[in-house]
Length: 278
Image (cartoon, rainbow, N blue to C red; front, side, top):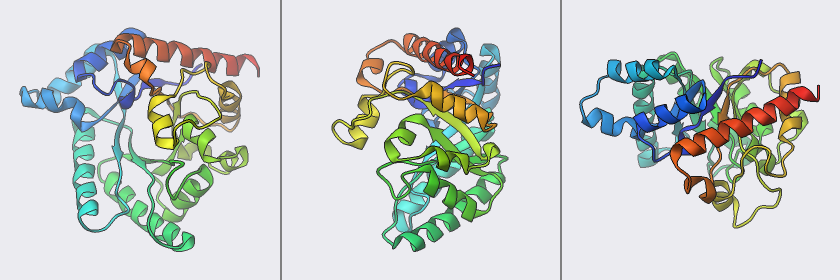
């Protein structure tokens, strides 16, 4: 049986709530990712929490993930803005239901050991706040930050010591951030909360940020061995849902329903290939 597959929020970022529900449902996804901005117009039109949940039910979809949040490591004005945004994520999760909230890594201007200790302390506080809303916290490691790989990411989550804290396995960032298979093996399978899938080229073009948002490819169309990676993940006992997150100029030029359909078809093909080579 293939894992649950959901349509990541950023895959169709400009789509309205209804547009993303229709596209995800028509393609055959289990669920979606969502951001507060994606229900802003619905709120302005007077839709209630019950209205939003009813629309999800009509389409047979679940909200898997809300996010993302940054700046949780910061002090001062940046930290205050981050806390306000975090509250908005919790409000969204309570309105529509969600399994986890997505937090991305950042950097602090401290020596590495002290930086990791501070980040772990602040991540623990995030986990405590999220636990009050019945949510897990999935940490996504970004190659251009102070926590670029899953080795450091798991060290951070482990030091935080909170049972609802876990890791995002993003295939793009994993291949670009230097994560090794041994780093992945060191993470308890139940602490990998979600897998985000996209393909790409090994060579970075135009810098990490530009490449990340402009040149991802559909699963199976790039140079990453996604079938091999997913085979390893399954062998480790990971049962996390898989989010489709292909960000590129090419994909954004396509209608929302076509993006959703192509992403799901390509992802299913990769997962089937991983199973076929067992």
